[in-house]
Length: 196
Image (cartoon, rainbow, N blue to C red; front, top):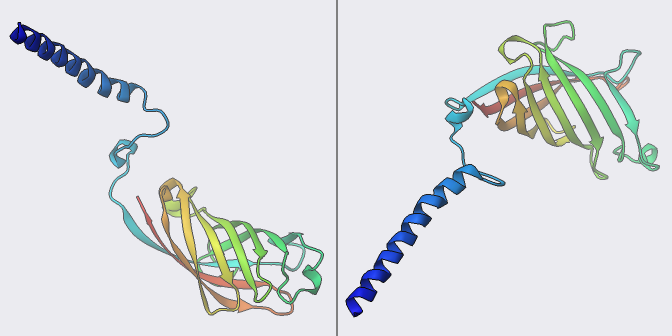
């Protein structure tokens, strides 16, 4: 009798194990809920590469065709040494050479804001929207601090779209020219980005 109970118990356990081992993966595949792990190949992603982009950013705050416009300020902005609280919307041209008349490669579109009370430190929130060559229609997103009077500033590349999907990297900015009378500036950018 003990052998029969043991045999019956083993049979029941085997049946239960079979049911759970078959149903669990099927359920997980059908209903993956909030997240699941994918292979990059399933999204058509190939080998990751590192690209270097070099261009000039033209921040034009003067004249009738300004590409950088102040859209907000705090009550203390006008008396602040750093312009603290000023918010500027931009649609700045990007070119291959420092001259505005050189070949355009895209636009820098977004916002920068004076975010420091002790030095001229800008919060940069912008996209480099490219319009030239194989990167036409692709973007890189910048979110970081720009201490304007430092020789070279490093800002993170936090993402992108198009050919820069899944992008990450950094941008080095160096002021090429700054007109203290008008406020217009040309900034050289070297961008290093990993992408697929």
